[in-house]
Image 1 (cartoon, rainbow, N blue to C red):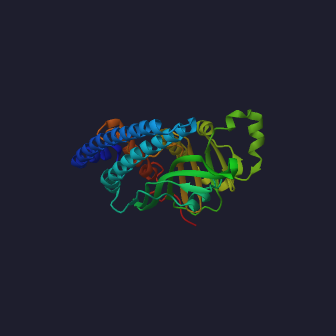
Image 2: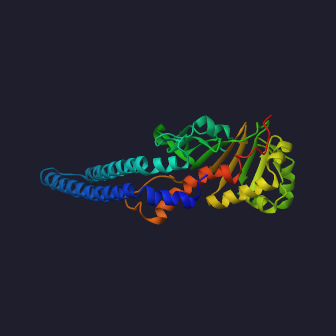
Image 3: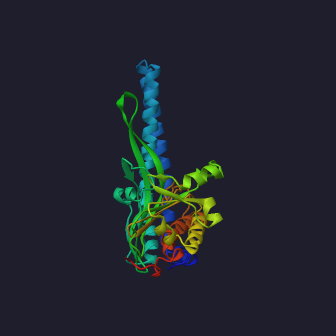
Length: 320
């Protein structure tokens, strides 16, 4: 398992020539984009002057003309960004992933399946699941897959127009667990439990919900950070040993974002609510900048580190 330091070394040393080329392409893309901005702006101004001299334009016409100009400019920017980002992912992210394990397969335009997302029972069922940067394969004998995800619900807006609204955006990791679970155990961020008084919390512990029974764990820090629901409380306590709870706390601190965990069938699902694209390059940030590079490296290390951090590669449980 590669450490962050080893990934950093690979990024800045092994990929040095590629990074220099990417940086050169980024600068050229920005110059080309602003040239296109200038030419298109000039053409729109000339066209606007000609129209105003020959045709009486109402306020609505000016608004439409302005909107067309904005859309055109947005198209130029999106095209430049997309080409640069594709090049960055093929030239930098892909070899960085392979540096962890050559067997890992990378699909920059795919994501975790909607069935996998629903199966976790961590969130409501999305109408559409989009995402990118899907990776699958094995690390230290543990099957793993991960990607960015964006879960959306569909609704009808004004004039019966179909609208899609995102209700969760984050980083989804699925790894095989050396045990077949009979029940379902969910570990959720403690965002609502703190609202209740201790009396109400004690009452809730004995209430069954759609997610299972709310359990109290013997770890005060874990209780402050998470709530646990399970359809099989004996199995849940068997899984969530004091050691594993400590490891989950450490993993949550390392991610720096809300963490959702689901133990289902023979897999652990870790979903990080970072609300961003984890491996997206931007035209206006240099890939040679340490802060920018470290974020890509940290996100990738986080996905692979779940195996070593939670010791999934050690046969601590026997499969039934």
